[in-house]
Length: 113
Image 1 (tube, helix red, strand yellow):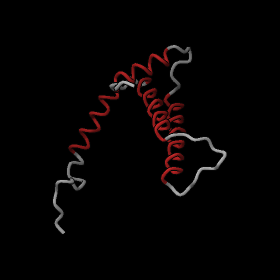
Image 2: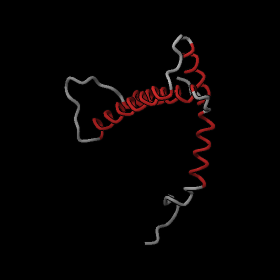
Image 3: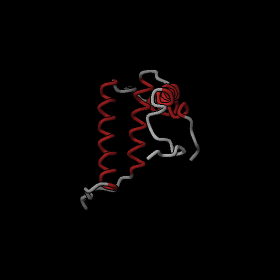
């Protein structure tokens, strides 16, 4: 598989959705879908790292696949609202690099205990 930019991923999802008459779901429906997909991701993480083992009747799903499902629906929501995810990412990183600049202990800082 080749590496894709977020812009390319948004274009790929848009081309996929664009071939169907129904188009994108409403923002509220997609938010519900994101919630559903995050729940499935949580279930897989819990089965892998938590205390709740999978039932023998449950099919095997990978955390990677569940993360991909969340990303797909998130891209659908962004596309339907005409949000550039690269710009959204830059806004968030700017926030973390300014507002939260001194919030966490950096690895290269010595502790003064």
